[in-house]
Amino acid sequence: MTIRPCEWDVLHPLDGRPPAVIRLLVMGPNREPYYRAVSPEPDRSQRRLIGYWGSLEHAHDGVLALYEHLSQRSLAGGDMPPSRPLVPQKPAPGAPEQRRAARPAKHSTRA
Image (tube, rainbow, N blue to C red; front, top):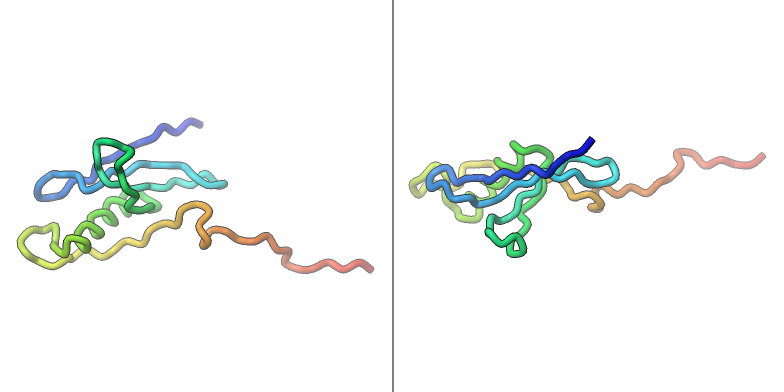
C-alpha cells in the first residue's frame, strides 16, 4: 500500500488566515498515523513545529485551542477570553512514553 502525503490548511474562523498547516505522516515501527501541525510560512524551511495529534479532528481543534491560548482571545470574536479546551498531543514515535524495554515476564531457571 502506498500512502501519499496529505496536507490541510487550518483557517482562522473570522479572518480566513491560516495559523497552521497540518500534514498526515505515517511514522514509527508500527507505521501509525500522526497529524503534524506546523506554522504556515510559505518557505517550508521557516516553518516551526506546533505539535502532533492522533487524528485530523484533534489536530485541527488542538491548533485552534493553542492559537486562542497564545493570543488570549477567543476565536469567536470580540474581546472574549479563550473558550476552547486544549487537546492533548500524541507523543512522537520514540518519545520516552512510547519506549519500553523488553523484559521477560518470568525468569527461567535451569534445572
